[in-house]
Amino acid sequence: MVTACFCCRGRSQRKGMVDIRAVLVRFMQGQFKDRRLRILGIETTCDETAAAVVALKPDGGGEILANEVMSQIAEHAAFGGVVPEIAARAHIDVLDRLVTRALTYANVRLSELDGIAGAAGPGLIGGVIVGLTTAKALALAAHRPFIAVNHLEGHALTARLTDNIDFPYLLLLVSGGHTQLVAVRGVGDYRRIGSTVDDAVGEAFDKVAKMLGLGYPGGPAVEREALKGDPMRFDLPRPMLARQKPDFSFSGLKTAVRLEAERCMPLSPTDVADLCASFQAAVVDTLVDRLRAGLRRFTQEVGACKAVVVAGGVGANGAIRSALQRFCGEAGLRLVVPPPALCTDNGAMIAWAGLERLRLGLTDDLTFPARPRWPLDADGEAAHHGKA
Ligand code: KG4
Ligand code: ZN
Image (cartoon, rainbow, N blue to C red; front, top):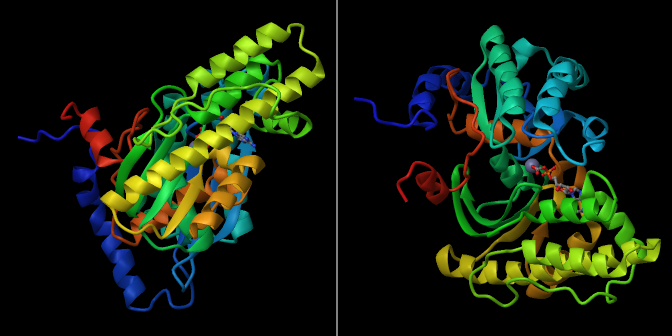
């Protein structure tokens, strides 16, 4: 009797192996000598619709041949946040054009691709279904291998696309939905070292922006205001500071900003800028402190850390990037932060994660389900299955 949960990869990979073996055999026989493996990646898990083509370079790194992203900010701005139904419909409206554009810029026909990767979650289910179904349909029509990619794995592996770094490394994943420290030991081999006990850091940026009337998306707006403000004016908490366990918490900090804002009402432009600067300074101190705790844990549990990698939309923040750079410089550690456009959601990260999986022979069949929740690490996955 088959007892595996429907959302397990196990069974689906085996069926897909037939296709990938043929691709790899041809690759090894030198039929692809004159060209490199090329993958199309599709991303629709949140409010960015994206399609990209990435190629494998001879040195093992990646090259982005096309990276088309269409943000839905305008559609959601009036609501102060992402509206799932609007997001799903907006993905449907533009995805086919983005795929066509990506293939055109990459100068590759669908039939010439070596695989098609689609983000299968985690994310807003309506949007995930749009991108995943499109990726499956293209794979079916073109008789190409299909790869279901975990969006978080896309973020986790981006530093190998941009900087060709080796495993293992410590990943600081800071996005709108996730704040985690993850030991990345290999493709598909992740160990969560710490995570937020309440809000994600991007969520805290978004909520602070909303309460200060800065609109959506909050992160870039708060960063812009912070540049004009005084980070010392408000004495805000640094949650979890100096705790051994490398976890995060941002809900108390967000509440502290709200209380200070209420005390200043009505808010002047200077108040808003100072609140943003003080909030951002508290986030910076917290992230550096939690990274320090995460590194200690990494050394104990995994061994020497080769590099620290930052991924996710909040990694686009200049103050956070500089503080992490300073910290890693002092600690003698290599820090890899992909360029801002590859920190926020994009198709290249999905294509690259698909390529990393494809070259290991990991493909999926067309029954692979869309997963609104999909933990990256084995412990989280076991908990999801009720085993832990
Ligand atoms: O990774 P991402 O594009 O989407 C997912 O959540 O998966 O991250 C989006 C988050 C949002 O919360 C946004 O406000 C935040 O990243 N963000 C920033 C900046 N740019 C985007 N936060 C702080 N500073 C920024 N410059
Ligand atoms: Zn993301």
